[in-house]
Image (cartoon, rainbow, N blue to C red; front, side):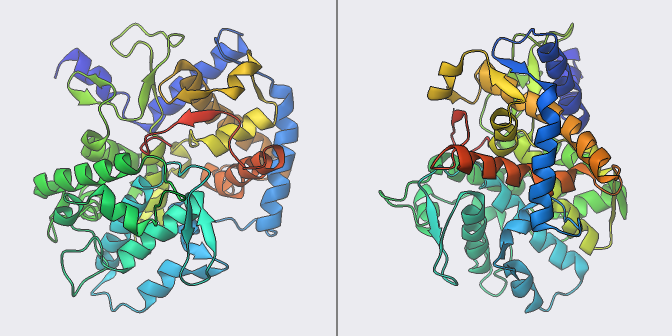
Length: 410
């Protein structure tokens, strides 16, 4: 292994995300970042707002984890739970593979949809946008067997089907039309095809107890860790096994780094100089795989070992709450590339500030990291508060900073 490869691999972890995000925050506190200033005095008021919105949704503070499964609940009805209850599963592992299949595909389709797109729900007739709409669209595809190669077993995702998925097919399922555009449609389809090809080519990882399917990752994790694993190990496996599917951005020592970007202020003495790992979708997926593992009898520990998510609702919370302020407010009127220093700065600061905010919230509620882990703070929580504040400040509910998305970042 070359020194560059070893350096690259060091960035494929939740700890690397947290460490570099905290370094970025310290730079901001030292007033050494080009785009943002940080006002920690605004953190207390932001925490109060998050607590208020959390209590509205969860009065008893019995908060579930932040995960994709929350988006499958519509008007109190657990859509996936209803589907799963009608199936006679051979055993718990069969259901776990199906849930891994669904979570992986649904999360990878979950990058920002844009403000205009809506999904017409056949059950309620409601038109649902953003993450909730994307979730329902992907669940309907899954339930209809769109991803399955076996008509007698629709609730599965086969690598052979994913590898051939077209943007046109995705557009039909997501009800895309000239007056209902979905941001990054081709990027999403390309990502799923890449996932299918990678899974099909790595049967030793994804086909230990079945034909090649993303859900084979469940067997891989159990083989490696038995019935007890730490949440950061889920992310580690996702980054190592699925890393090559992401669009080519930065590769170091032959290792594709995925959701990792350059920022000139983050200086190191090795080959990772200037690199800021964030791994947003992979961490969102890691959170979303915890419950399937638990339902299958696996104990998942160190959930707080994962970080907050570097996406626009959490990030918008800090901008709209005054914790983060752009040095040049005119930049709020422009759209920015995902790899721009401004966006990288914003996302990294979001990760670090979520740790700070969680600590304040726990103190105010008399709770600790065990009773209120970050996954519950996010769900309660910061994501919903970011959305609420965006709707209060902007008629379309858009985030305060506009990011040009290809459908594969956030």
